Amino acid sequence: MEVNHIVQQFITTENYTVNSITNGLINATFVVENKDTDQKFILQRINNHVFKNSNSIIINHLQVNCLLQSNDYQLNIIKPILSLSKEFLVQDENLQLWRMQSFVENSVTFIKVPSPEIAFEAAKAFSHFLDTINTKTLPNIEETLPDFLNFEKRVNDYKNALENANLQLIENAKTEIETTNQFLSLPNKWIEMVKNNQLPKRIIHADAKISNILFDENHKALAVIDLDTVMISTILYDFGTMIQSYTNTTNEDDGSAENNFNPEIYNAVKQGFLFHLKEKLTPEESENLDYAAQVAIYIQEIRFLTDYLNGSIYYSTKYAEHNLDRTKNQLELLKGLNEFLS
Image (cartoon, rainbow, N blue to C red; front, top):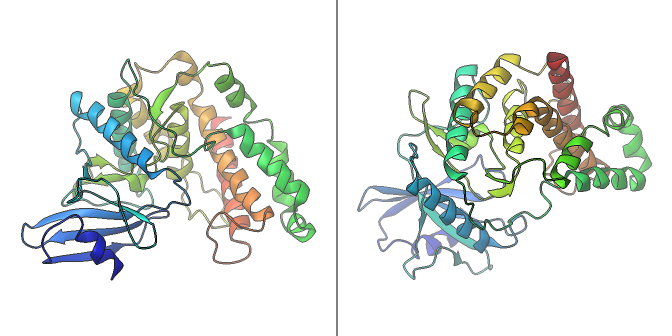
């Protein structure tokens, strides 16, 4: 088995077990338990189609860990583990790269937010993480996902997809296209603020979903995980994506959803996000939190619709209209948020 060959490049014993974790969307993930020492580790195969420069994610992870360790960080720190050959990445016979990380015992994760209380705790954990790593002097964080937060490009990609799409797909998505076009100017303010350097450049997590927080049995945060997407950008993106992912009461691919926005969770996330960051945010950041939430949902909707019009070549789909259903769901979420904010 390929994974056994990789495990044996990190640990010396053959007395171990390997179990797959199936809820990850990008990297293949396993729990390895060394039976001789009763130690557990996370083993991952890095998706090199998404992360073209795997060394960068290791470099960024180590730099973020230095910031966490040198400041008053109260949560567990996930540590990269060196292989027996003193490398953080090892290669398999298919030229795929693997890494091992420390494991947090007795932890649980959530795929969806079960309550406003847990939403608050998760947002508070991210707030603590972001507050700790954003010191006066920022390290040189490498770009692991070029143009990931280029919203101007996201909008242009949508326009190009619409111009070149199959006519039947355009007809199928007619209502959603009309609604999307009504909001086309929504990201303009964000794009201009970024271009004009009105928003401070900060280290952000860039994937602040609930499943990237480990909780204990009492639902208190233990760790912030998955630092692969860490980048320099505006902290508004982390808040926006928290709202986009936490407040949705339905599955993301439920195209028939109605009233899927939860205002209680919105308020809980905002309180948690501001818990450690309130004094650090500039007026421009504080004043645009609600706007950031709107833009984050809209950009995710545009990405789903763009992929649908392109023939569903980016996101994994289980049926022909999967991305269209995701688009409908995000538009309903945006509608609920707009009504709440009006």
